[in-house]
Length: 321
Image (spheres, rainbow, N blue to C red):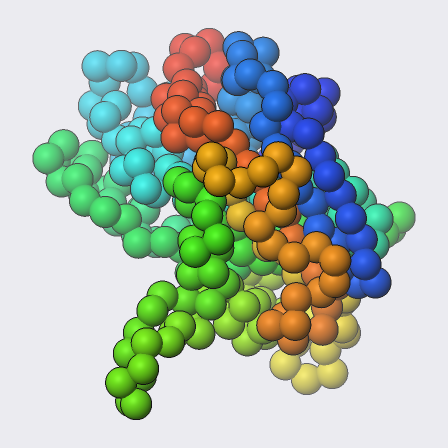
């Protein structure tokens, strides 16, 4: 399970926050203001280990290597998640940051969110990649992304049942320019039947608007809760089961979440948002509460590589804090 509380003090020293709320739309701009010092790295490392621990335990068992192999042990080069290609690690970084920010800041509706476990073990291509790599160190390649929602969290009632869930997309980009944001939300350029250059329409808005009211990730999360701590989360499991039946399902309110994270560019002015915050973007048609977060970093790649290079490097650490 994911057991590490968010390092809120470290986040406050690292990121300046500029929140806004309009009707059912929340927007949060987070700008890096502090340095990525050792105290921040230590705080993030513990949180990231907690987020990845379930998948690490699962994948290492599936591919047949020790959970914490020695540096020169069999399969030590194939340890999850540090051995993954840089592009894959950047995707994972965005998903963990989605959980970290959701647990640390006030979102639209002022709900208390919890992430009992991350869904990383359901990354089938990572499992295949690790299985091959453990047996042949030369079998490196690009890794396909995980299907479904990038992120999923719960709001629990006093009895432990799920009263609301939050789901959505987390995207990392090296440089956050307006053109990059446009492509993320509206898709890449294509040439249509009239020989016109248009956006494909297969971006974030398409994915969020067409998602089912209860996404597949909810079933995956329910299964993980059953497998990992069915007693503590019995009420949550039951309430999710009632929402997942095909007939007479019980509706659980949903908050949609979009996280865009990447590096600043010289052309952007401080406190300037790249996504409209004054009102709900008209392209969003799903009709749920919507929370958008922009995270503007400096040298984000260096941060990501440092974090993922530090996970489980302490031989005395056999489990997340």
